[in-house]
Image (cartoon, rainbow, N blue to C red; front, side, top):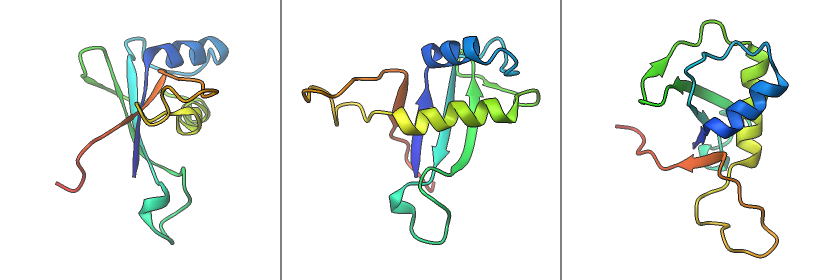
Amino acid sequence: MRIIQTEIDAIMTFKSRWPCNGFPKKLDHIVAAFLDEKDGVGRGMVGDLIDYSLYDSDDKELPVWDIDGSAISALLDDAFTYAVDDGALRGIPGVIENDNYKFLDYPLGG
């Protein structure tokens, strides 16, 4: 499973391009879980969204009732596509660093 946090800068840029997104005004970051190559065959495709949560700046979870499904899908697709593992690619010539989407290291299964 790949856990990715979408930061406020990416959210604000997205909102400016998709004005009818339905995102809560207090939205600060989004944490989403995706299938990755370690999840095995038969459970879906790499990049399939498993779940997501919206948070304000105090890490309080926000409701998802009014969100445009197409908008959240597009934003989280970008998150999966452009996320950079902190440290894994940093400092390599020719690699564009991206701090708007970050891999998170959460313990699973407990």
